[in-house]
Length: 320
Image 1 (cartoon, rainbow, N blue to C red):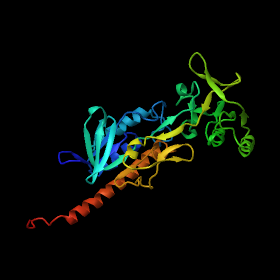
Image 2 (image 1 turned 90 degrees about the vertical axis):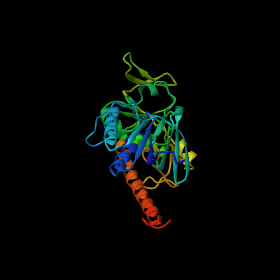
Image 3 (image 1 turned 30 degrees about the vertical axis):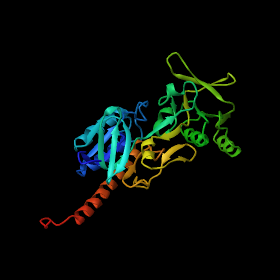
Image 4 (image 1 turned 60 degrees about the vertical axis):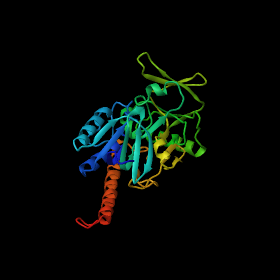
C-alpha cells in the first residue's frame, strides 16, 4: 500500500451471506468496508433458500438483493468484480481487481468466496443440478419427500446420505457406482430397507419436458427415479488465501478448505474467513452466522489496534 491509496478498515472478498453478514456488523460499527463480489453464488441453480428462519423459500437472488441494500444503507461500498491478487504489507493488504478494475487497500481482509461443487461426470447431472439432482437433505429434502430417490455413491458419505434421505421417503435405493458400500454399511442400509443396486451409473434419463425419469446403468438397465442425490467434491475458492500464505488442506476426503479458529481467524495475521471456504457443510443461515461472528471479531481486533496506536502517539500538544 502507499499513501495515495484509500485504506478501508476491512475488505471483504465474496458478497454472499457470509460476506454480507460481516459487512452488516462492520458497517453498523462505523467501519469503512468494501465488498468485492464476482457474482458467482454457489446456490444460483436452486429455486429457493431453505432452512433460513423467516426467509425459508426465498429465491437466492432476492435474498442477496435485500442483503446488499441493507449493507449499503450503512455506507458499505459494493464492488462488482473479481480480485485477481492480494499482497500483505505495511500493516494491511492491497487487492488488485481483475480486468483493470484498479486496486483496493484495507487494514483487515475477510475472504468469504465460498466453494465450487465439482459434480460427478455423469450425463444429466449438471443439467438437473439444484432441482432434481441434489445433495443436501436439509436444503432440498422436504421437496423430495415421498418421491422415489436414488443415491449415487461416488464418495465416502453415500451411505450416510442414503440414511438421511430415508427419513424423507420410503422408496430409497443406493447405486453402488464407484463407491460400493462396505459390509457394515450394507447391513445399515438393509436395516432401513434401502436396496443397493450394483454397477456403475451411465446417465440420467429425462422425459420430453426435461423431468428426471430414471437412472440408466452401464448394463443398459434403467431404474425409475424422480430425484437423484450425488456427492460433489467441495473445492473451496482458496487461491487468494493461498497466495497470502494461508494453507488449504484436504478435509475428510470430500474436498478442499482452509482452517480457521471459531471466530474465522486464520493462521495469517489480519486474514479471516467465513462460510463455505472454511466450512463445507454450512447452509446459508450458518454461513451468515459465521460472517456475523467474523465481523464482530474483526472489529474487536481493529479496536485493539486503534488503542495501541493511540497509546503510542505523542500527547496532543506535545513539543515535536
